[in-house]
Image (tube, rainbow, N blue to C red; front, side, top):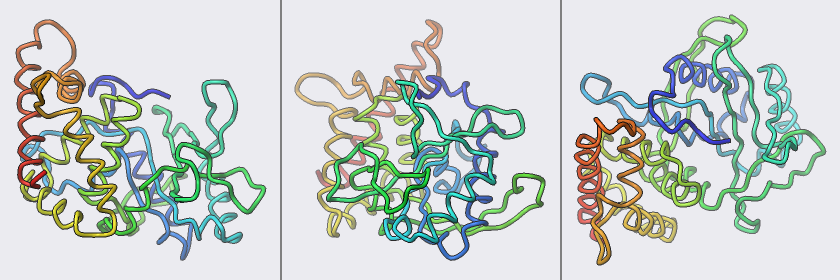
Length: 297
């Protein structure tokens, strides 16, 4: 299921509904809520502390992407609690390109707005990436295995958020665990390299631009991560950033697909925006190259 190719294709109301889905889901999971970590396009809402007009608005999202700890999926009681909450939220399984129902991607329309997509992700190093994680039960829910997704367990931030619950059950406050700048940038880099969605490029660059301390702050966090157990995953992500955004012997960074994706997503493809797009591409390439220099790679 492809995402809109332009920022104008996203609505703030849909992003707010994603937040409502997340809070309602967490509220119903009891002690297992601590085994769920937010990644993906809803994360910038919490990762970036500044708000417009101090920073430009983020495009928003129509997805709620969560990484689930394997021990939760292996716990029969926890698993059935998760399954029951999906039913209460009114979610149903999405179909793949072959028209087959999948068990890791779910959808529901909230308040008549665009469809909200809820994806369950996991990371088992003994299991092939991009495949559905096998579970110990015969239920309807599974998780898509994403290599290195578990780095969010070590690289995350914690934040309290309040949102109106679904089914008009009032406003509730829940504590969420969401990717920090390192795990978010790494996972977005992998996604960009694999599926080439413009939205991934926008999410990635937006957070590196506007995170605490800007690219210098992000570089400091990356240097620390390179000393930790996820060193290999971080190094891979930095190589992906260089491949898609930085100058090399064959082309200038601003002309590469990363900056072009960001500029077209944010500004459109009309001829009258071409000059502004070129400026945005140059700024984007400069940002990533500055980041890489600060990190020392």
